[in-house]
Image 1 (cartoon, rainbow, N blue to C red):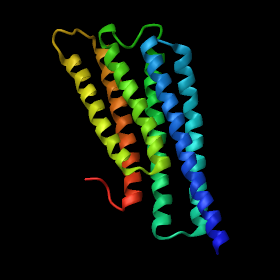
Image 2 (cartoon, rainbow, N blue to C red):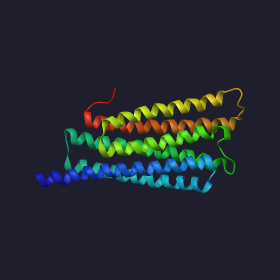
Image 3 (cartoon, one colour):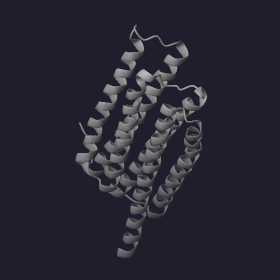
Image 4 (cartoon, rainbow, N blue to C red):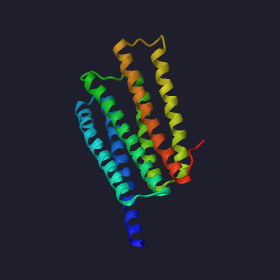
Length: 217
């Protein structure tokens, strides 16, 4: 019985490590997507777009491993909760990869022009930097199950929301004259970063739930 339990724990640890690895893949994707959109870097944008298939495949492999473990081990109580929570975290992380992919696609669409006007470069750079930072923090939350750090991720999301509001404020400022195409691009880009951070928060909240049995207030 002890051996069976040990094997099961090894499988849980492997799934947790895979989620950490997926988080790191997503962080790299967002890092490169931000560089591509700021620097009009077509080559890097194409790399981000290509890497999305790898992220999707990796997430599907995690799902398969989780479902296989559930079928073989028939876990209950906290063990089942851990596996179901892992499924949902994988879905959130995969969606984060999609959103960085969307940013890279805007960079590719507007190339050789830059999608970001000079006066908004710092805002977009801040959105990218905070998004990567929050993702790296989520990676630590998954591996350590640190509930205090999970709550910190929510506070970081508030900062990203504030930067996003600043971007929208610039777009509706009558002193700024953006054509329709540019305004749509910038609105979508801002939304991609904002939603990316929301999914990061979702992952941290799921870890909090896994540890405490309840979601943070």
